[in-house]
Image (cartoon, rainbow, N blue to C red; front, side, top):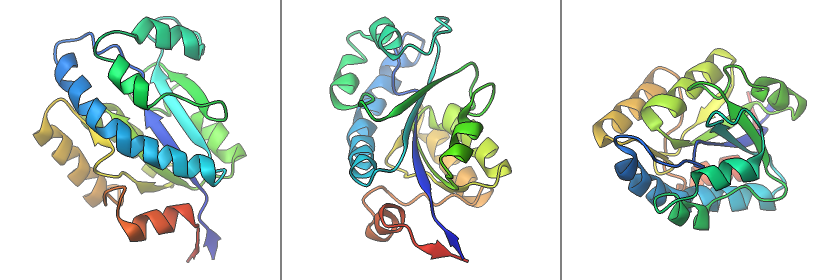
Length: 191
């Protein structure tokens, strides 16, 4: 029997939304910020790792405050009011779509003895999907709460969820699903 050891991964929620579909994605990111914050609070309460991983915005410094300051604007502020890293949360920068590519994430997860990932954030059809693919190939068990990822296009988001469920064996129940929350918050042995 293997003990479930989860980590919450929050992808690209520190964002300036300064691109063609940015305002649309910002409104969708705002809707998922609350459910992600609820998961984050549960993870913090249970002393489980929370890892924010974010684009570097050409700063190439893992300086959380500099990235927040650079991204702060009318689109991001409502999201920042709900969801930013806390004192005990971890923060990494990434150069490309996947949270694993060119980062220390895999090493960090091994040091934390994590074997289960709860992936959240934006964009569901790009960075979350690419991260899920890389996590699956590294044999992590995956949870992708369907109310905690967003894409500019709802059809693309649903397609990404379907791919993660069918191909990557991710569980995509909403973050409020009782069995799901119990399974993650109170880890059980699995065979």
